[in-house]
Image 1 (cartoon, helix red, strand yellow):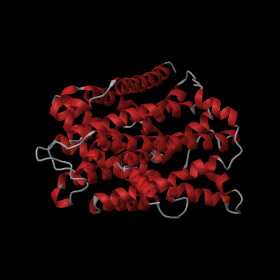
Image 2 (cartoon, one colour):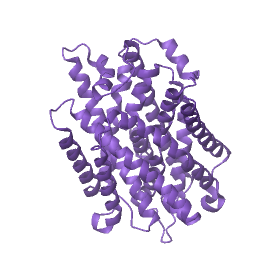
Image 3 (tube, rainbow, N blue to C red):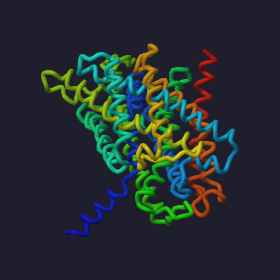
Image 4 (cartoon, one colour):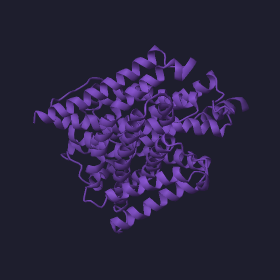
Length: 429
């Protein structure tokens, strides 16, 4: 009896940065964007989930491999092999995108909490910001990563709801596998948002650096700074990455289906508030007298849980990028006094994000806009990652094979085409 249990335990031990990154991918910005597409277009954009799974798996695997092979984060690898202009452009993209995303997510946490508590929006944003900074700065990486993994379970509300509602399964299956395209700005705006909140700049930098954190935890670093890894480590990394991405896309598919069935089919085609988004979960608790409140409770817990998961990933990836670019000590496994600059970037990025909430932007609209911005910002970064992952000089024996290389370049072309189509339809009115 011990052997099967031992195998299961070993399997779950391989879960690490990939699972955390996959769960963080469905942050409040993701939930808002997926809910909006389901409400506005019904099942019309469901096919994007099937499209995105191999693309996000390929790009995140390439990022994880870059970190694992080099023992350095993405910004450090860029710095060692490219000009300062390329380095600063890449770091600027991720820092700006992440700071905007942090602000939108903090606002979403406060808006979700207001569904349950009659507390001032400003007080809630300040409280959540303080909590996030305390957790990220004053807990060890081992403890913190465990917290992140458990918070990922809050996504289960959506897959459960899918099977609580009478669904037109034949329509859903067709929409899942047969692409549907509308040549207008609204359609491509949301498509770019879906791609941007799924294949995001912060995920590239975060997972690359987290593989280095894992190597440090496992004492795999040699004195020269190069990690001592082999084929088994790369295999486990790929399993971890695949599981995280599959988990993320199951949640994405479920959110779109639930929003399409519950909101779109009942005439709610524009999600303008947290309360609107929470209505998608009402069928989960419709047998209870206070179904409306219970759905808001579940939605709020999900948003808050995933926000607490996603915001530290956003600020952490910005900190990795800036710290590596300017030779500061990096790592969530380091104490504050040993990585003052690293934690300083986390604090500043989070506080600037907090201030974005005080310029009058609606939290739900800000989440969708952030997703679209990420979709545009990701394009040049994917181009850079494709070149690094394929380079024999940088990656040695672990450089991308033909399949990985092809999928990463397809990811680049799809993201580019979506952004171009969005701007083209905007220009055409």
